[in-house]
Length: 357
Image (cartoon, rainbow, N blue to C red):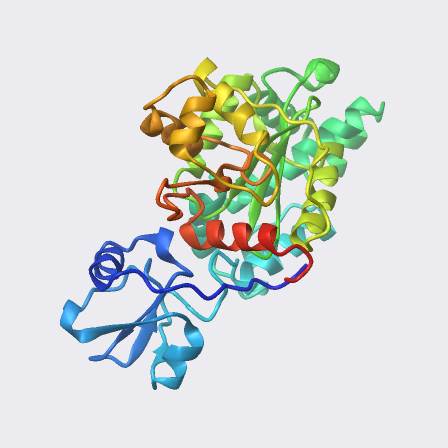
């Protein structure tokens, strides 16, 4: 996939950048970089380090400018990584799990990979809504479910997916899917996976009906969105693979390369009647075009309801495919975006210039 390219745009007004930096507002990551004169370091807007006085900071459009001004990168927020990118140690863990999804990893295995278990736990809780061990357990359970549906013997499945006893496997299976392994044909679940992209890691989720989740893993609302999705569909979210996830991954690669303008993967979206009406209207916005929040409100027969459609946009759980990034303010400014304004800018620039990224 193409590496992320942040397109040149005027910096926001200084008061706006000061507010974003002092408030550690991740929505401005990728929009500007902050240099701290008293320490000589530069940070992302979202950095959680102790904030200096506004008089002691200056702002730059990107990393290159901060480096040439003599600043060095902050070790805490690591601004040298593209916004939203997963650290290398996270990629190593995911590659290890992908290589042997039925392998049971213990804390000592993580330490041999150079990763402290507590660090992995915190990162996965914040970005994936579950601990690393829960992620691994879910991958093994999703694989076990597929094997049982294919007719494999229960004994072979239980012991072949990392459980030391049949009772332990049955307990884990029942807690996750709400029924015993013997009734696996009746089980429904939302298979989830995390993929890399030019805009950082993305979590995908799919049922047998279609794609139901596409969220950036650093989005603050991710955990709430996951919880609501499970309740709306009455299905647990379990890490694993699915044909719809493979389909989505393939189409996203083409989209980010500028070679695809219409997605064909089926989608499942549940919400209030008003939210669903807004989301259906979003899908009708053509590639490369934008509309205003006021126009969107009129199209869903809610004139003057800009705030209501804005809230519905914010609750969209299938980013990009349900293109809420194509809605802007009436004055042409980007407005808000749950994945961060830099991503909205990137996506709109991609759709204006397909094939040039």
